[in-house]
Image (cartoon, rainbow, N blue to C red; front, top):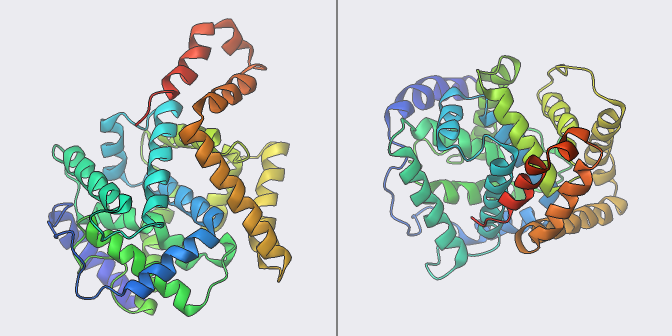
Length: 337
């Protein structure tokens, strides 16, 4: 673990912050690429879609506590309201799901084109900001770090080969997005990767959750409300409590009865139900299917999302009284990325 702390302190947080976000690596297979490992990582995602989804969400909430990344997201003005956060997270989830589904190194595949599109968007967004390799690696952590350090608490059961496949997949994606191999969180032995992920979790993300920077609360609320529109059962307060639970941090406030029950159900399903021999596989398949259904509805049938928002808004007297405000949210959501 001491080696991981030295890597974080001297390599990532010092050297990395003076290196540009995109190292300019060509979008061709690197010498270390193992296609079989990469495919195992992709297959593992599809078997554990909900767990990966929640892990990514928690990771993104953690990223909002990193001052430099928070300021970049605020400056783009694409995540500061529940509507823009909904659109951004839906687009992010759709991109990432595509990467897990196709050959990311095949120039003819949608996954390859998606990664290059994201890389170009990053390049455009970062041109006027000071985003570095450090920020890119912390973002990489957000998409897989907790799967390595908190796997069981997220409902995961995997073999060594499956875990190595998942890490290899994110090493490849990091490479395609411009992360230098010396900074790539997934480079090295599995024990090194796990220790580095744990160190980032303890030294960077956990302190940020305890003492978040200014404007973090506003951005966090927007993200949680946006995600709530993708998956209505994901109660924002319960997800916040689950995030702190994964980091062994005491909840910041008392939960309502509904949020408390939702939080307890999340923990029960992930830590108990998913680990049952037969029932766990059935329940995992069912919730993965429901999440896929939600994603397809959001992408292809936005009118259903609009209806949901209106139904949820009905008990809110202030929304009914200000009809313009009530309609502006769903109408904006019709816009496609």
